[in-house]
Length: 127
Image (cartoon, rainbow, N blue to C red; front, side, top):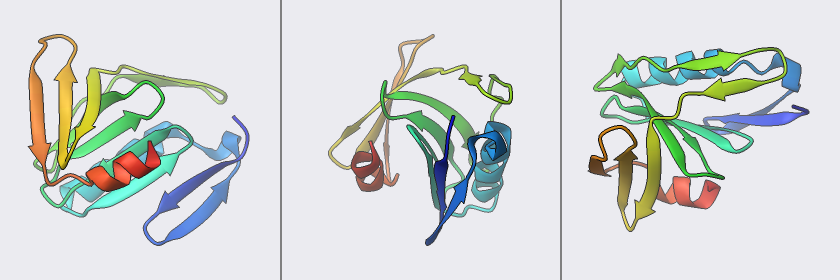
């Protein structure tokens, strides 16, 4: 995986790929959501963010994939597999940014959800 930058809050931290654990990052952002703390973390093509409303998401910029990690401070179940060199994520849908709105399209139901108040500018700049 190589050297990745994890950005948490105002600072940056360099970590080796072997030291990156997706499970740790998911738990971290779920804790931020439980505390209703807005946070944005990027790792390569992935972004994890939490909001002051207690929501949290994991996004893939390359394919615009998304999975909700928490809702109203309560963690959601997320399927992923991780080894020392790879990980696989059970993506549940896709996202797009439409003006000031975060739009999520659920793969299973086809349901489209439009959410205001998410860090859409930051998502757009990152992705």
